[in-house]
Amino acid sequence: MPSGGRAPIADALVLVGVAGCFGLIAVTALLNFRFGYKLGGNDQVERQLFAWGLACADVVKALMPFGFAWAVRNMDWLAAVAAASIFSVATASSFYAGIGLAAEHRLANEGGNTSVIDRRADLKAEKERLEERIKALGPLPSPAVLRQGIEAEFAKPVLRTGRTVAAYSNRCQVSLTRTREACAKVAAMGVRLEEAKEAAGAALRLREVQHDLGGLDGRVQSADPQLDVLERVIKWGRIDAARDDIRTGLLLFLGLLLELGSGLGLYAVTTSWRHREQGPGGKRMTTTLGDAVVYADERLLPVRGSRLTANQLYADYEAWCGRHNYVPVREGIFVEQLIMLAREVGMPLEQSGSNLEFCDVALAGKS
Image (cartoon, helix red, strand yellow):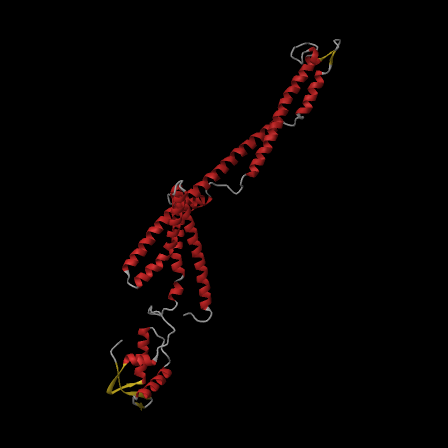
C-alpha cells in the first residue's frame, strides 16, 4: 500500500478518472438512446424500447471487463465467454451508432457551413455590382427634386399662347417648335430621374445586402475546417488520400475514442485500487496478523526427541503466513507467544547458546 501522502493523491486521481469515465459512459449511452429512438420508427413504444435497450446495453458493456477479469480469476470460463461476448457485441453496436450519428452531424454541419459560404459569396458579388453601378451613376439629385424640376418646366408659359408647356404640347407628347427647348429639358431630366430612381434602389438594396452580410456567422470560413487542416497535413506527408477517406478516418477515430473510453476506461483507471494491496508476486496482501496459536495448531506435531530452534520456527511461520495471506508478527513477539503456549501445554524448552530450542516437537507436512 502506498505510504505517506501518496495514497490520498492516488485516490483523488482515480476519482477524477472515474468521473471522466462515467461522463463517457453517459455520452455513449445517450448516443445509443438517440440511435435506438430512431430505429423505432413512428411507433412511440418501439422507440422507447429500442432506445432504452441500447442505452442499458452500453452501461452493461462498461462492467463487462470487471466480469471477465473476475471470471478468469475464478476459472469460470462460461462466465468469461459470456462477458467477452456481451462486451464485443455491445461495443460493435455502440460503435456503429456513434459513428452513424457523428456522420449525420458532421454532414449537416458541413452542409450548413457550405450554405453560409455560398450565401456570403453571392452577397459579396451583389454588393460589388451595386457599388460599381452607384459609382458609375455618380452623384444625382433625389427623385423628388427631379420630379419638381420636370413639373416646373411643364408649368412654364408658352409665349403668345397663354398656355403652359404641359397644356400646349400635351406634356411633350406632341413635338412643337415653341415647346421644343422645354421638352428637351424635360426629357433630359426624365433620364436623370430614371437614373436617380435606379441609384436610390441600388442604395436601398446595398444596405439590405450589407445587413444580410453582417447577419452571417463570420467564423464560418470553410465547410469543414478540421478536414481542411488534416488534408494539408496529409499532403505534407505525401500521402494520397481523398477527402471522403479522411472524413471516414475521423469518424472511426471518434467512434474508437468513445468506445474504448466508455468500455475499458473505468476498468483501466481503477487499476491502482484493484492492485493496491497486491505484493510483488501478485498475491493480495492483507492486514490480518498471523496468529502463533493457529500456526502451532496447523504446523507443529509432538515428536519425542525432536528439536526445533526459534529461528527455524519463525522462518517456517513466515512461509506459513505467506501461503495464507497473513501479515507475520515480529520474531520477538512470535517467540514470546510460542513460549507461553509451550508452558501451557508442557512443552520442554532449552537454551542452546543464544538460541532457544523447543523440545519434543516437529514440523508437519506443508499446508
